[in-house]
Length: 196
Image (cartoon, rainbow, N blue to C red; front, side, top):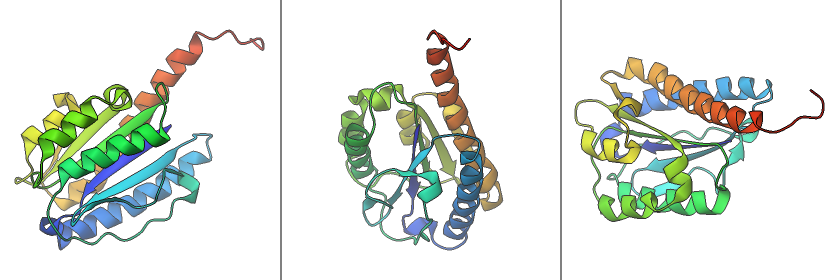
């Protein structure tokens, strides 16, 4: 499965927020790498959304090969550009039917043309079928834009303090992995296995 994580690293994240995000993601990465020993085939892609939207690495990497790079907070929140880059990555690196999870975390609102970026992404079949989660960090997070991304209010989480960040990120990542694993198991259960 592939897991795409989009992280708001705009200037409003400076200070305690970006520090907590770096700590949380470093800890989660260790947990995911430990889980990989249980046979979970997980590839990870992380995008920062700050001065520009950019991937931490050029393509999704097996979680065991993923090295964390410290995030810095700067710039605006080009969420429309992030949607366009996610659309491109999904089309290039994922295939329809492959288990895919997507998580978006933001503490603000889009500062570019989010409507056209999201409209492009909405036409992507892989995005449409993916399990999507969003985390609203703090009271200034733009809830309507996050709801439009996930299209399911039950997949939107609210974090009011940096202390809650690790728990919420861990919860959404594990839910994403569990959901796509459950989907894959349902699909595979319909296949005859000559060893049964």
